[in-house]
Image (cartoon, rainbow, N blue to C red; front, side, top):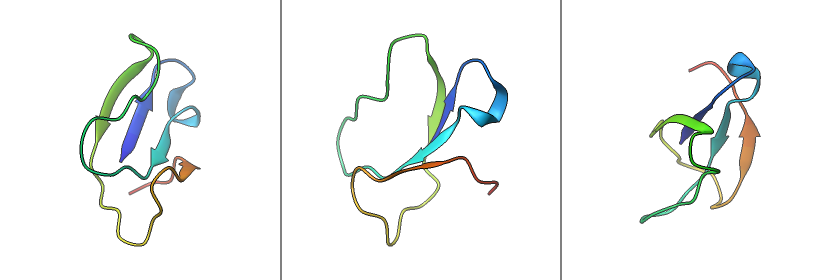
Length: 53
C-alpha cells in the first residue's frame, strides 16, 4: 500500500505491506491518502520509502 503523509512532499510518503483487514497507519490528520499498489513478494509489516510507480 502507498501512504501519503501530510507535509514534506513525497519524501515523507512510504510503502507498507499489509494483510487483510484494518491497519492503523498513523495519527488522525497526518495521513492524507492510502491506496493499494500490489504486494506480491512483500512480508506483512515491511515498510519502505516512497518509490515512483
